[in-house]
Length: 302
Image 1: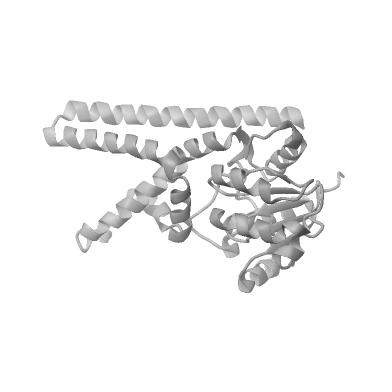
Image 2: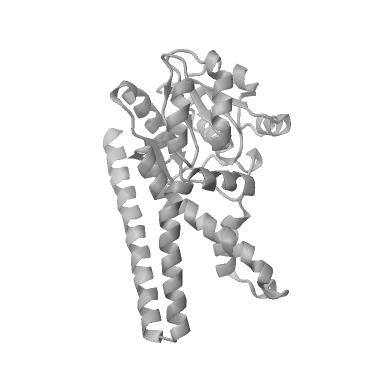
């Protein structure tokens, strides 16, 4: 039996993603010891009681002797947390994260690290509108995409170890530059959240009893608008530059659709809806192709 790839895994921030990283790592034996740290004591104690982590500690204590540190805090808090613990990191340690914006993270965090410690940006495309370690799942990353930011040759070994870590958690790994990641995630994650929030906000004008008629379509479209507003306000603000293009393009499509409806042009309406379905199918096909290629590559590696 092969030994675990990491001796000590420290997860700083035990929300849904951080808690799931810890739970999955324990279930799959990826570290001899999994240590959790967070600002609030109550979630830490619940995580320890649930067996998500082996022990709990302060952030500084958690990273001592850790060869892998996962930042599970909101993106805007990562620099402060990393600056606080940087002096405790041992040479050879690797730091990664789960943040959904990569440009600001990759620009700022490596400069906070001492010599001999590597930072590799990560973003697992998994989650839920639910939050906290109580909802952590060991299978959350199974089949999910996980972006690992491209890096220079100096950090290539660290990047390979981080990529393998996510594969061991069940994810399929994709390499992207921070800028490309932020552009692509603006389309497939941030814009959908923004639109769902906008629609939910517009419901103040809906008839009082409209909820009685809401079915599965309504629930599907609005589920992500139940996500944490503080967290998503920060994400959308940090990625506002990459969001401007997709938001402008969507506004044009919505305006076009509105004109067609006003004109009562049924043929044009059907054509636009058909084109929309085709575009969606193309994106879905791209996702399937990527997953298949990843599985084939993973099979060769193992």
